[in-house]
Image 1 (tube, rainbow, N blue to C red):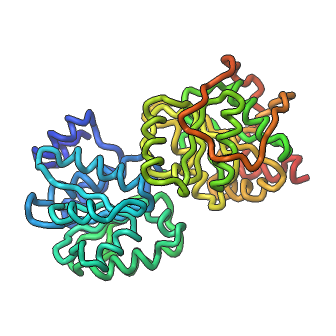
Image 2: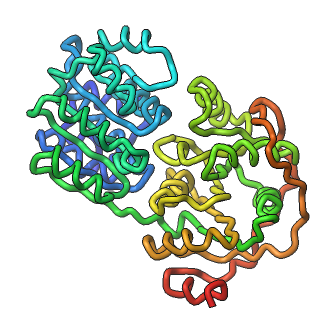
Image 3: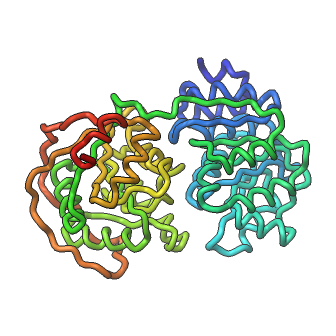
Length: 413
C-alpha cells in the first residue's frame, strides 16, 4: 500500500513525500483510515513503528489554519514533545499550521505567546496543566486529543494529570491513545475517556533476525571494566548505555572519559537546554556513546545506533523493550547486551518470562581491570574522544536462552 491509497489530502500527501516517506507502516495504514472516519482509536505498537505519523497525518488534515487551538498531544517527556512537534511541523508545512510545544524547565512567556496563534499544542502533562490553570491555553474548540506513549506517562505518575486535562476538553472530541504496552491503570483511562474506540495492535516482539540480544554474568565490582572491554571489542558505530539513576549516568560517563571513550550524559536532572545540546551532539557524531536513564528510551529518533548496553536492568519490564528498540531500526541490524550481577537476575528473569525473548549468554573470558572512581563530578560533555582499537566480533555465541531454559541455567540451580 502507498500513502495515496489512504485518500490523504494533497497538501499533506505532498509534505509526506517531501520528507522522503515512501509507504506507510503497519500501524499507519491500519489506523489512519479509522482516524479519518472520526473514530476514537487505541493503537498498541512497538517503539519505532511510526506512531507519530499514524495520528499526525489525519490530525493535520482536520486542523484548519487560523481557527484557534484545535488539537492537543500529551507526551511523557520534553524530548518526545519536541520530536512530535517537529514531525507535525513537517507534515503541516504546506498548510502553514502553527505547532506550539509546552514543557517545564523553560520560561512560560514564549510559550504563552505561541499559544495565542497555535492550531496544535504538544506538551508534557504538568506544563499543559499549568497553562490551563493560568488561562493561557484554551481548550473549548479542541477536536482531537492524543495521548502518545501513554504507558510511559502512567509509569511516571501522570495519571491524575491526564485525567485533569481530559475532563477539561470538549466531550465531543476525538481521542487517540497510542502506547507500546497496556498496563491496568491505562486501561482505566482508556475505558473512561474513549468512546467505542477501535483497537489496533501490531506485533510487539522484536525481530530476532535483526536484533541479537545477549547477557553477560559479572561481579558487581567488575561491571564497569566489562563495559569498557565490550566497547573495545564490539567497536559500536553508535551506542547507548542505559542506567537506572542519574548518579550512575554521571559516574559512568565520567569514568568512560577517563578511559578515553567519548561519551555524553542524558537524564532528567539536566536543564532542557543542556539536554537538547547533548542530543544535537549525539546526532551530529560529536560523541559515539550516550549514557542515559530511560528518559532516552522512548520516542527519540536516533539513527544508526548499533549497540545498546544495559548497565542496569530497568525497574519496569516494558522499559527493556523500549531500550532495545533504539537499535535495529529502519532495516538495520543491532545488538543489545545486558550486564548482569547477582542482584540483576530477578528483574532480568521477569523480562524473559514476560516477552519470551531469545537471549544468548555471551562468554567474555578474561578482561583487563580498569579503575572506577566513585562520587565524581558531572562530566563535561564537550571533552573526551573515543579510543581503543577495532575489536573482533564474538565467536562464542553461547547457548540461546528463552523463558524455559533460562530458569534451568546454572545461575538458578
